[in-house]
Length: 342
Image 1: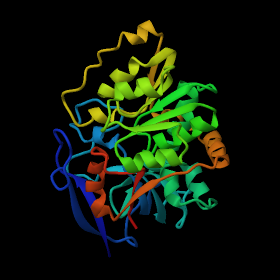
Image 2 (image 1 turned 120 degrees about the vertical axis):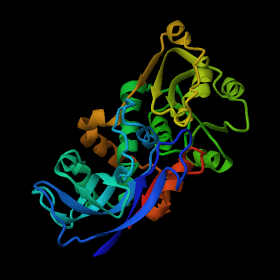
Image 3 (image 1 turned 180 degrees about the vertical axis):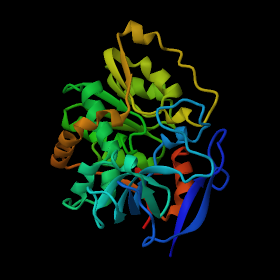
């Protein structure tokens, strides 16, 4: 018998989630040898787990509609992770194979057949052949990387010489979008929330970067983007989106990747400058990255050919996942947030 630490969903937060109040550590025992698996199921030992802002949307009552199912009170939270198969009743997975897909916030997870079938088998097979860290398959070579590849090209439609502005630019997605935009010949402007993050953006060769907490964003964009903005890669939403609308050029594209400023409030910011969409013929488009999985092979090939820098923020131990998750919303993480489970 082995111990299996896990994090369960304890209560629906009204505002910012709190470790211990809304997420709770529990320890149970697991008997791998005698663990019963239905046809197609696997049992995995979890290695790394991705913590992402979208998970806040799953911390809701089940009757509230969203693009992904709600977490269930009293049940283990889930997220995207990498793992090793320790027991299998699935023809596609043998003991010792890598698995990338939905796992629990726990040390060992039972993965039912329907979840296994939706896993990222192509990515899992690539791990053993790759020279990069396994955790990169949850970031640079995983869903955040897919976000960069798909939406910058499809929605952003970048053209050499254009200007792109990226919020949360040092985060999992922003840091890569900026580097790809530079490769494509764009002028890249980024914002972040502290000095160390701004220094990192300078290391990534962003043309300009500023701390939105210590300056007036409107005035700063007037200074740094005197000829306007052609692509806005929005990870924040709210008031900053409202400000940026006034700085967009005619026919500019807004890639709505996230709205982290709005996830922990019931008093959502009302955008006032929405008439700019008509006046300037703007395109504003959101996306769900899993709708573009058919692009995964071409994405892997292009990313494999790019020499990109990538910063991770790795937290050790599943017991520390709740507080790490909370830190996303207060800007305390720096780079792609990953939990190293074992």
